[in-house]
Length: 345
Image 1 (tube, rainbow, N blue to C red):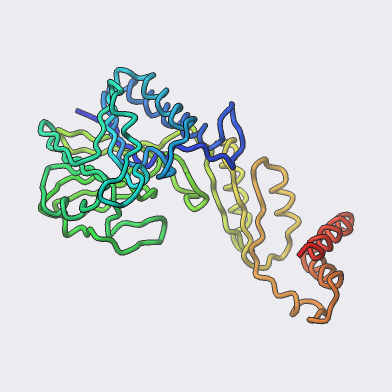
Image 2 (cartoon, rainbow, N blue to C red):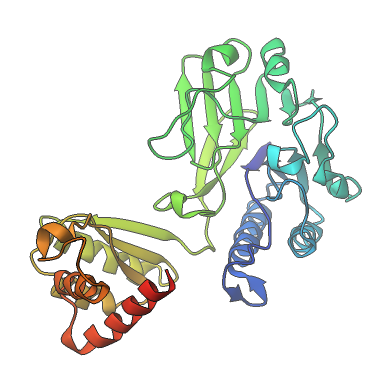
């Protein structure tokens, strides 16, 4: 009785992105990654895919292109059953009578939609969608397994960041043995005596804040309670390395290794402190596609150059270019850009 668990698909047009094979780049990667998950299910004789909220992204509207992409995927797998749980991005408001964008899925023959609590008695799974009063409902009920969409007090929104929420682990202990959640995009587990909580996480890196995260889907065996984590494939991964004088060679080697193993990935090399020599780093970065050098050093030009509040715009630009060690052949071009910026400001 194995089933695949995913969450936080966030299908949208993401129109600000590049176009890839006729689709906005992020939507293309969502399509390809979710299709790969469905292929995995078919190849491994898994019949059910549980989606724990936020199928769509924009809360108050559905983009027809994004909806069409998602519908085409589920219609391409008529032998799979998709259980779709309502998330906070799938409803129009937080009021008592919100409209759910999952209504359009209700009449798909291989889709079950959960816009209100539902108990699967055969597998002892309690589906609790996002709705007003969900916290109280979860605390008052019990089941072997809970599927829901909320932030757990002990979980992390993203690496290193937690927020206080209405539901704590102690509210679930003794009521549920297995808890699977959507809402937080960081894949994670919170394991305590008698209870296991899992965030499947988003299936691709949806924002730059999700850089370096290895995305996944889960396989849950309802008979043995065994949970397996499988990395998702098919999307452009963003990695970030912060380099220093001490680790620069190691970080550059790691970046090159990543590019060789995944040509589609994008890598940011970030400088946050003064470096002895940037020429070697520039040369290494420029030799690799989709590898960017990002200078985040805090600049205090007044301490590094002979300028003051009475200095002209041109003097300030010259001081900045000198500090940045710009190649002489490019100085005039950058000076022109700088003067244009000051004139428009």
